[in-house]
Image (cartoon, rainbow, N blue to C red):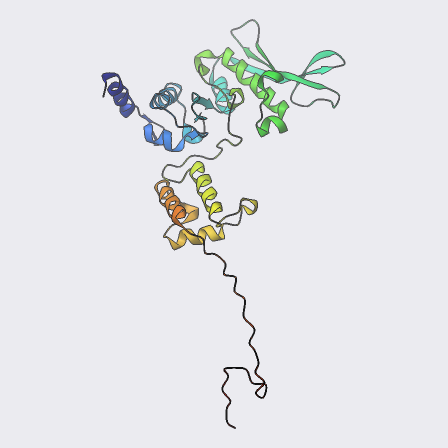
Amino acid sequence: MTKAVQVNDNALALAEYKLDGGQVLNNNTVKNYLVRGNGNITDQETLMFIELCKAQHLNPFLNEAYLIKFGTSPANIVVGKDVFVKRANRNEHFEGMRSGIIVERDGNLVEIEGSVKLKKDILIGGWCEVHRNDRKFPIKSSVALEEYSKSQSTWKTMPMVMLKKCAMVTALREAFPEDLQGLYDSCEIKEVPDKLPTKEVVIGKATSEQKRKLLAMAEVKGLYNHEDAKNTEKLEYFCSSNGYDLKDLKFEEVDELLQLLTNYEPVQDVDYTEEPIEETEDNGQIEGQQVMDM
């Protein structure tokens, strides 16, 4: 092992952040619970995430921060919009903000406060202005739809809300760099999962990603159907038959269950067709049937 690699391993092993709630943020908890996407994060990315959470006092177990990684692309550290708003409200110089959308109406650009437009309006972008009591002018940010619009479902169904959000986090970061430097919301990231975590992460429990893998394998084996997602009866029976509780799976149990599912061979339905019983001409008795003497 080279000296550089050894130093990196030592730094990762020592990297730890104990949160107010008692949880400990380290290499294992980050990689096992706090990564979204289909990529494998590197040790360096894990280390950067831990150090950022420590420096910015973020609790990723309350979804204040998480990592997004797809394939071999660099990981993105993402925080929720609420973090931006809470940090701004804690700053003594914050005096409020206004935000909304930008539309084209009758050939003119119009700024609308909020996220409601007329049917004839053409959506162009979003805007936000943040007021500080130590600045003469507000800090204003405008963002364009064409630069932010993505294929995720939220952008397709709520483009006005998303544009307003993008403008807001951009303006807040510019207004309070000492509080929000290096922090980005998911709306600013090029590629994000359609569903981001909303529930508190519980250490020891199976993660959402693990459960998705389990359901996918169960469907291959005929124990689950995503079109009838609420019906997990077959999978629950399979789990209980092997000593597991599907509704209370532990993190370390998922790999064991996946292995059991991989080896599981579904029972094929037997095509049983009853052969007709032939009658003999001997008094209409069925062949093979004994005649009882009366």
